[in-house]
Image (cartoon, rainbow, N blue to C red):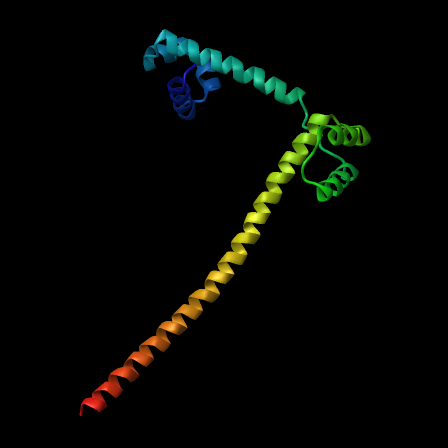
Length: 159
């Protein structure tokens, strides 16, 4: 299915619940809405795919790591946030995880670390900017005051 068909499907799906369309009499809807056979076939396929995905979501429970596993992973991350294959296998074996789980955990942790680092860097840059802006404003005021003094001295000297 191409991007256009997907967008069209989601527009239609947002307006009408697919399950409502199916249960309310698909043939009647097709006649009143004027769906082409090709478009209706696409809707049927997507509805069927959704039901398969719903079943797989029910069967597949998201695995959570235990507190001890997370602590061990955090300690290892503090030592080095990069993971060599040998270290990944050893760590996975020690924690009773798949090497892929360890690799994904490290990848996600690096992403969180990078985000936090960017937030810290932004905070430092913002505070430095604020200090510089205050200093700049003070210098501008000093410059204006000195300009007025120069004008006054020049005016007095001309008299």
